Length: 314
Image (cartoon, rainbow, N blue to C red; front, side):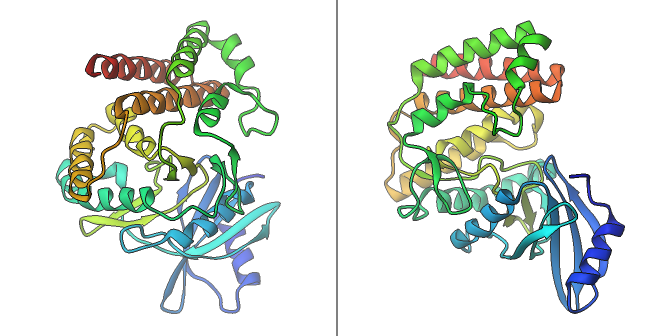
């Protein structure tokens, strides 16, 4: 599917809606979709166009977990359009989380902790499995360990299928880093973790901040069921790329909240190491797919540094 431009979006909405859209504008573009904002009367909406309907269906399903602490915009409609698919949602406003400054981050951390806790404690008992889940809420793997180790697979149904051949051909050093990380993951991966709702992409313009708190969490295409420490590990892994987002402050605030509610994560360091390794390996594969060798080696270095530091703290 070719990227949808504003003229195509305008024509589609004029034909699709009962009332013409006003103030249509491109407000976001990611790896898998493009997002336009518009108004109908006094109400504000967004329409996204993309090639992967399952991402939009997952957003629709994720809205069932919406709460004051976890604001997930409602998805009103999903359908086919312009050689791909569209989704219409309520529009939320704010700055992207990864663009805020240090002072704003300090103000936002309590709201972010509340959102992470809402995900940790969400009732997902009716939804089976571990790892990525489909539009019906059914996940792919019987255990968390099996999901983690599947990062080594280059299955034909993957969007980045062919990454292993590209990695081996394009970066011997990256290939060696992947082999090292996978060996480490095979040693540490375990099912000794609670099963929670995970977002697994709480940056990349997927979280908005307004008035010193989280105003929206969307794009659940990477969401999974598994160890809630994964979303903390995500912020810690990408910390060098976003130095204004004080990851130690976030961890300290989470640990304080856990003490308040009487919760103690068991085997926390080992579980975090598994998450660091999975995030690193997953992004080695992704950057091999893109052919971004500079970023690939930066990811490899970050993965190794985090794992070695965590082992020293054990």
